[in-house]
Structure formats: structure tokens, C-alpha cells
Amino acid sequence: MKGKQRKYSDLFKENAVQLSYKKSNLSEFARELGISSSKLSIWRKTYKEFGIGGFPGSGGIKMRVENRKIFELEKRVKQSEQNFEIFEKGTKYLLMVNPMIYLFIRENEKKYSIKRMCWVFGIHRRVYDNWKNGIVSERKKEINKLKEEVASLYYLFNKQYGSSKITRELEKKGYKKSRNQVALYMRKMNLYRKLKRKFKLTTDSKHNFYTCPNVLNREFYRDAPSKLWASDITYINTRVGFIYLTIIIDAYDRKIIGWALSDDLSTKNTTLPAFEMAISRREISNHLIFHSDRGLQYANKVFADKLNSYPCITRSMSRKGDFTDNALAESFFGTLKRELIYRQTKLLSKKKMKAEIFDFIENWYNRERIHSSLNLKTIEEFNAGN
Image (cartoon, rainbow, N blue to C red; front, top):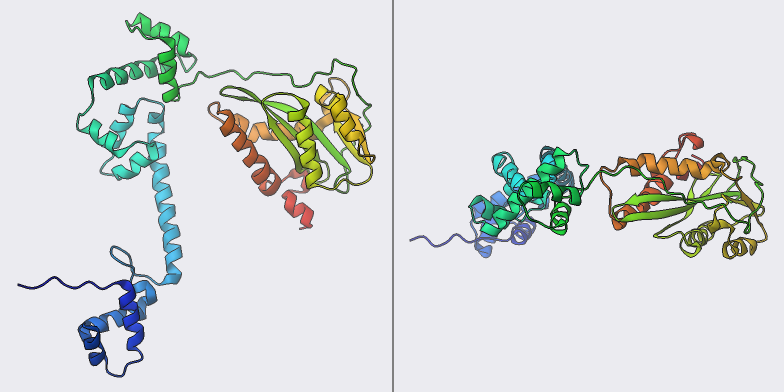
């Protein structure tokens, strides 16, 4: 009976081939290694064609090392395209109960791998297999049926009903479930009532604190950095309330040099940290105008004293109720809401929204976005003189 064929590691093959080039008698060298001369010849031929890439290991593909990076990139692109294809076709199932996703996976098993579909939808393979094999408890069946009813009512009423109204509709169908239970199932299925956009006033100018005249007078053009900084605050709606974004923009290159995100409108969490970031990022020149609206966050003694501690800073404030006096900041907020906020199909959590805003300001707006006011250049290109 023939013994098991000996297996050789890739490193062994590579070393054998490289050493063979230093030997005059290949047959003798092969015997020293304990292999046949024909096997050594095959290895040498493979090495000549593919280099060290000719020994990729079990299941690997032979190719030259310089081509492997391209191959891996193409493979990743292909996988990403397939992931997107699965996601695109299955998107409508994401807001439904799990059995609907399971049905989609089962119907597409011949087209995509089960493992990849489970990964795209965030489903454990074992859970899907249990469902497919019918291993579902009576309790689970009851919950799944209730979820189907909740999802059905949610879409029936055009996504306008929250947990209270859906609970009431379920009662009409004979279900005796609390609103908290219904709300829990809705959260798990990402079913959130569509909310109308709310307006929230962030500027309270009904006071007589440390205000000052409109020194800027809408003259926004500046020929160098740190000659005019404009600041403002806006609100952003999230799944669990508002967050507030304070920004400081330099008129010269439109860069957001200071900003702060907060859960309240206190000075210590809005204007002060935004200003501290600005002065740490950009040197203050002589005759800098700091322009804002007349809100309490800018007109209180703490922030006024902070600005007044820099003799080179001249304070300027918009006239009451005139948003065009602070057009620089208003323009940025319009861009932010148009390119980020209003594109969201659902309200995000505060944590997720804060991460999105960070990415928008630091990676997109300040680095990659082209600006019409800068002759269609990015801020970095403008400052580099390109």
C-alpha cells in the first residue's frame, strides 16, 4: 500500500529552488533534499514564471508579487460590488421583521453565498439555519407574528404612527400589548415615525448685555487669514433631542477653524470651546474682527471678557433679526444641512450625528470640498496657491 504523499511548505520550495541555482548537479541535489528531480524541475519552472508568488499556499492563486496587490484590490472591489448588490436588493427587507430577511436569503442562496448575505444583513448564520430548519419556539413565533403586525400597521399609515397609535390599532385586532413592548419592537426593526422638521430658536437677543455695533457692515472680503472671523450657532435634530453646533469661520479661506458640539446652549459648551479651538489652530493677526449675532452666548460677560483679553480683536454684532449680516456663517449652515442633514432618511442618534458632523467638517468641508468662493478650489489648494 502506498504511503501518504509528503507535503512541502512554500518556504521549503522557495529555498530549494534558490539553492538549486548554485548547484551543478540537480539530480544529486534533489536526492539530498529527498525529492525527485522532476519535482524540483517543476518548482524551478514555477519560480521562473511567478517568482515567490508561485508558492501561494493551499488554495492560493499563483501570480507574481507585483500583480498580487492589483489582484487583491480587484477582489475587494468585486466583493464590495456584490455586497452592495445584495444590500440594494434587500434594502426593503431591512425595515421588516427578520423572517422577511430570511426569506430573501433563502430565495437567493444560488446567486450569493449564505455567509455573505448573513454578513450584509447582520444575521448570525446559526440563527438563519435554525429558522430554515424550522427550529423556532412557540414564543418566538408569537413575537414574530406580532412584529409582522406592527410593521404592517407602520407602513399602512405611511410611517406617521408612533408606538402609542400602533398599540391602539393592535388593540382593535385583539392584541393586548403595552405601548412599551410595541416601542421596543419598533426600535429593533428601525421603525420610527416620520417627524416634521422643527424650528428651534438658538438666538435670544432680547437682552441688554455686552452687545456692540455692526462694525463689519457686511464687508466680508478679506485678503489674508485672521482678519475676519464669523461665528454662529445652529440646532440639529436627532433621535433623542437636539444638539447644537457652534462654528467659527475665517472669511479669507472659508475654513471652519473652530467648532463645538453640545447638548445645551451654555457658553461653556458652545462659544468658549469653539473660540479656544480657533485660537489654537490659527494665529491671531492685528485688527481681527470677530463677528456674531447678538445671542446670549456671545453677549454674556464671560465670553465678552474672553474676546476683550485680546487687544487686537474688535467685536462686531449683527443687527437684530437681520440674518444677512452674518451671511458667512449662515452660508456654511445652509451647506451643512443641504449636503448632510437633509440627506438623512431617518433621525440619527446623538453619537452617530456627532460623528457625521465631525467627518463633514474635518474631512470633507475643510479638506476635500471645492468652494465656489475660492474659484472652485479646495481650502488646501487655495492656501497653497495652486
